[in-house]
Image 1: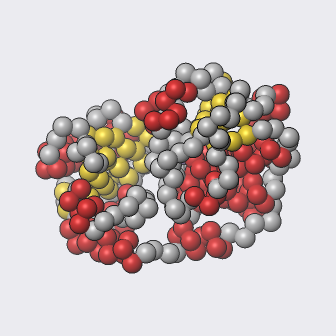
Image 2: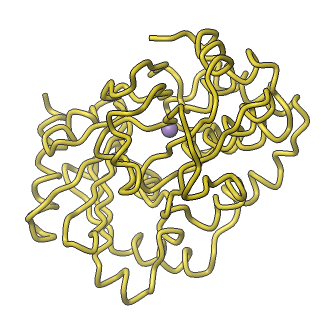
Length: 316
Ligand SMILES: [Mn+2]
């Protein structure tokens, strides 16, 4: 595994970079990709992001103008915040065995990169990219802003249990790079569309409780998605909703995908290891935040299966 200093050395000696982000891209993968692209250009390299078709409107401005043209001749592939082979977007699948450098912070990282820099102790991949930017002398506002987006969004604005003193130190250094974080915080943490608020109202009134209120389940079936005409943007970070309820320490969010599979997000307190819950169904992630996909089950069956796993892991 490379140190961040060695990553900086790697980036200095290679060129013509193609940067990969993960499926259903979030602020961390997109913010890191944008920052990496800009710092590479800052040291005179050619760098572009592989087009990710699933970018939502709220993150699109950060990666605007950085997409690689179809005929871009890359020679070095770098992935950011990309933990698993199953998380490569469709158009990135051909790169599964061609990632030259993987930078990630998931303990479940699948070691697909030829070299890697993986720090599970970091709350956001942005913390790692911050160090790389500092090594390269590229902490410009254009690099710092997407890195702030990465760190702030991956930590729910610095409140998730994965946040450390280092997370705050990184945020402080990014602010000192000369960016205005107030509009970013307002946009991502203090603004909701009317549709989103209506959705939350409905989910809050329909949520179900198990195990004496310690397990809460929020369900978003396709019927609701169609009825309310919900986009991915409307449903961003819905997994945080159940965690707001007093008395619960295991929040499950079930979203039905178009093919009928159930995408499950599990957010937990220290009593329940979310990774263990999701591993039951072939998923993974962090101790307090994990995910999996349940296939071939009805809504009722999927709910019962995931609740059973939550109760079992909690009692183990
Ligand atoms: Mn991340």
